[in-house]
Structure formats: C-alpha cells, structure tokens
Amino acid sequence: MTTDPTDLAVTIAEGVPYHVWVVRADGSVEYNNRQFLDYTGLSEQQALADAQRSELVHPDDRDALVARWSAAFETQASCEMEFRLRGRDDRYRWFLARVAPLRDAAGEVTRWVGTGVDIDGLRESAEWMRGFGETAPLLIWVSRPDGFVEFWNRRMIDFTGVTFEISPWRLVLSVGDVIGKGVNAAATMSLIRHGIRFAAQRGQEPAEILKAVDAALKAENPDLTATAFVAIMDIRESRIRYASAGHPPAALRLPLTGRTRLLDVEPAPPLGTWPANTLPRVAAAPPAYGSLIAMYTDGLTEFDRDPIEGERLILEALRDEAAYASTNPARYLRDAVLGGRRVHDDVVRHAPGPIEMRAEWQGSDLVLHVLDRGRGFAPSLELPLDGLSENGRGFFIVNALARRVDVTASRQGTHVRAVLPVTRKARAA
Image 1 (cartoon, rainbow, N blue to C red):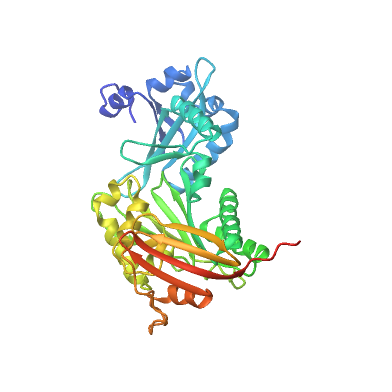
Image 2 (tube, rainbow, N blue to C red):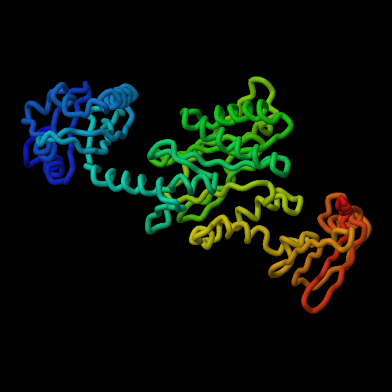
C-alpha cells in the first residue's frame, strides 16, 4: 500500500476518526494512519516495529491479543478483540479492534486491514451501569430504541431464570420442565437452573452442559426426570448453538420477512435417564439481527393433546408483526396460542374474572367453597369415553374424593361446595 497522500485509500484512512493499519501477507506492518500515530506518539518508523507496538498494549491484555491475532493470521479469518492501549500521555484506554484479510482474484491473502475504535467511554458507562444494576434491589434491564435488550441485572436473571451472560457478547438461554409437581419438583428445577449456569460459566458447550446437569440430577434426585433446551448465542457472530434433552424446539422469527420456523434439533432423552456416553447433537442457526426466539414448555403446545397443532399455532402467532412489536412477546404468544381453545374443567384457568376460595370448619367437617363469575356448568359423574379428553374428568375426581359436592349456579356465577374427607381432631380436655 502506497503512502502517497493522493491515493484514495490513504485519503480515506487519514480522514476517518479511528485507528487504521495495514499488515502485509507476511505479517509485517506496512502502514498506520495519522490518528494511530497521534494517539501513541510513535513516529512512522517506530510504528512499523512489532516490538514497539506490543509495548503499548496493557500487560494484562498482551498475551490474549497476540494469541487471537496469531490464530486469525494462521486460519486467514477475520477477528475482533478488545484491549487497552497506552497513549502518549501514558494512560491506557480501551479499544475495539477488527482485523480482516484482503484477497486477490485467486483468493490469496494479500494484506490485512485493521481498525481500532476508542470504546473507553462506553466501557466506563457500561461498568457503572453494571455496578449500579447488580447492587440495586430492583429488576433492571436496558434496551435500545428498537427494543433489543442489551443488559439484564442479576436480580432480573434470577427472577426469570431464562438467560444469563457468560461474556460481553455471549448469552446462555435455557428453558426446562420437571416431570412432577410440588416442592421436590421446584427444588429440582432450581438445581437444573444452577447446574446450567455453573457448566456454562466453565465454558462448556450446550451438549456438555446438559450432560453435566443429567449427572447432577441422577446424583441429587434420581426419582425425578426433566426436559431442557440450552442455547448459547454469540451476538458478534450472529450465531446460536443449541441442544435439547427431550424438550420441544425453540421457534425463530426472522426480522423484515417475518419468516418463522422451529429450530432443527435431535433431542437426547430427558435429563435423569441418559444411558452412559449419551451426548446430544449440537445444532447451529444464524439468526439475523433483530430475530425473535421463543422458548416454551410442552404445557403450551400440548394443551389440547395435539403438539403438532400447538407448534403450528406458535409459528402462526410469531408471524404476526404484533408479536415482534409487543412489549411482552411471551404473553402475546401465550394468549394467541391458548385463546379460544376448549378446556372447561379448570376454574383457575377458564372462569371469567376473579375467583374466590374459602375453607371453613362446619362442626367436624372441612368444607371448601369455590365461587366464580362463570355461567355455570352441568356436572358429570361419569368419566368421558375418550381417555384423553379434557372435559369432565376434573369434577369426576373431585366428586369421587369428596364426601359431598354441591354445585349452585346463579346470576352472580357458580358456587361449588365440597365437603372434604378430613375430620377435625377433638381437642384434648
């Protein structure tokens, strides 16, 4: 590259407000722009020497920088790195550097072009925000005007249990479902969540993360099983790598076109059941900037015992631009998928408006009252002929277990009164 000031490339390099340098195919430095020389205080000749340039890099960043550049040079691939560079005032500032190869018509690398952008102010702001966000007793997140979330604090991550950061550019996304209920199942879900976080922080890939959690689950609670989907998203590379242990695949919506699809995955068996040497296949997808990824449990897709239809409804809801524009896409998808689906025996999910529940002792009997604002229903004392039907089974079970059940409908709603099979112990004299 000529340093002739009439050369167009040099004119551009000298005019941009960041550092620019050019490296020959053999690795020797050929050119540095004026901004680099003014910042470092090096002469044009000094700036061509690797030793002089290396001395300007902060000692704590030097080895990593050399390793990253050596790997890129060896593989002839672009690379990106952050490091501190000393200026002529002997102060270090953070820079984001990108280096890319230039190739001739035959595909051979002829030069490397590097750029360095001062990000010291951004890092200071980010560190302040991170420090405040991690200590404040609040759920905090930061998003850009386009809705892209750039930061979640630890309390937000712990509350949602969905995603966490393992580096400034890499996020771990996970969703799981314990096969069981109650306190034991909740404790197992907590174990899985912390196991995923621990394995991810150690730098393991999605398959190894799931393998570690499977081993932990077998050791801590061998009677329970669970499903899980784990993904690692690299923001800089626009790539997501993922694996599944018996869990439904995530759904992806691409920006602009609105195209949707389920992420291809070959799930391993549920956690807690893996045979020896089991390792799920890790798949990858290149989501475009601004993509929407939906993770869910089979409670959403199998609500009507039809998982294929449930997945179709998720993709259909994701295609709607309203899902992308919504401030709460998860709630939007839930309402879109469950809206209008027929289930009649669950008062908590399906009675309109609020419900009231009260238990009282009437003499030696424990009586449970449930009041809703529904239009009433005709209780059935028989099981449905269809073994998979969601209609009528709940009342049959309640009636079979309770000593007596009465249902009264009125303009105000429905009152269900059940005398439970519990007897109050007589007080000792």
